[in-house]
Length: 180
Image (tube, rainbow, N blue to C red; front, top):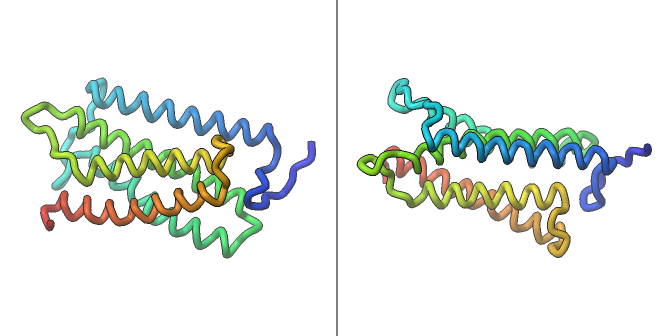
């Protein structure tokens, strides 16, 4: 079986590797949904307070920081080391899926709070919708799931959503800290 080197817009390696990665991504999404349902229904709890925040907040911070710095690092390194693009793309994709899982658990915890302590949705809901859209466009771009959109159009939308993520996360953090 011949393995072709990656050329952006022309597909990745072999069909077998691509299918394996698609299945792994699908498993990550299913696991994310399962963990969200489990945390929402309180099958397990991360409500222990350490310092000023509950544990679930620290998990969301880790996921958000990974995405915030990982995307910038990926953008820089893919231009700096084009020969390592396949590896960088895998780390970017699967690392962001894991980070999305962590942030999703936080979102499920917020939505699952009792009515007396229910959060006001604003920047958090906008941020989560943006993250779901980022994951969706990333998967479509990586695995060519929607063939009607050109890769250039999908890349443009994906990059625009990433820029939106940065704006909303800054506002969300400032709002959460009662600065604005």
